[in-house]
Image (cartoon, rainbow, N blue to C red; front, side):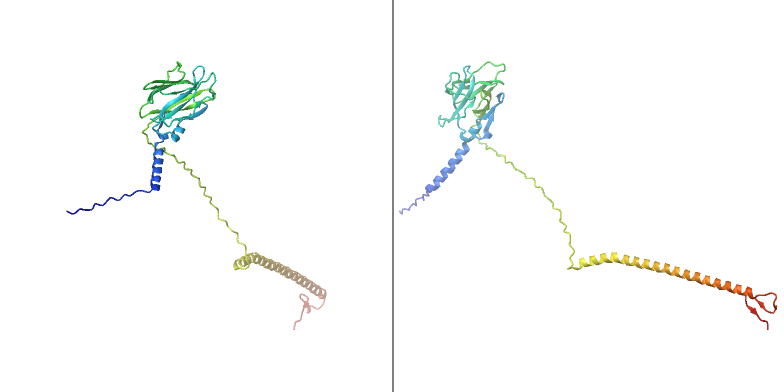
Length: 315
């Protein structure tokens, strides 16, 4: 009976560099994917009157806090009446590790004074079901949390003219922080922040598109004045036309004036000659008549008759 050789499977082992790169990429992806996003944070109604400096834990939640973390502890600073002046919330994971404190908000105070104390406490349970904020238009007095193992109070819980509104938290809407405002003396307004630990919504970054108005400048065509150049025929032709237009009428006018002047002068000369001739003829006629009258004698022989100074001879 023949034995068949079995071929061992080839072991393809990735290089150490490849594994390291894959680990870094996966690690980066997992960390980024686990961060809380603004799209998953919900703001509950604001209590009080917003004035002074505004704040929000959302800035730190979206940059440093894993979405699996929850409220672990708190610190409160109160005056001698027990009114809440400032506070901060501490978050931790399910193993109570990776504790991260939110920024302290409220009035600027000095710890250790007789009037102000700032102790720290753990929440009785990590599961917070309800909470209420005590405040009015003047200031925030205190906060009460209800957990599975009992209440946790921050500051004073006075009896107010208007009953405070009770907020309810669920597994898909868990308490994670605060937002509001404060001034140099007290907390002026306060509201709860909640989120869903399973939420994986990605923040949509709205791109601001700046549309530059393009103003089209229409340049008018530049008409270059053509300078007459004697080198081409156009300039000479233009000058010649101008000369002809000006000179020809002047010449014609001069000829007309000369013609009229000569004609008038000739007419005057002819009229003068005619007058002189007429004058001379009249004088001759007068002389002849005078002569005829002197030679004519009626007493002489009738055979000699004069007619007009002319002797008539009968043959």
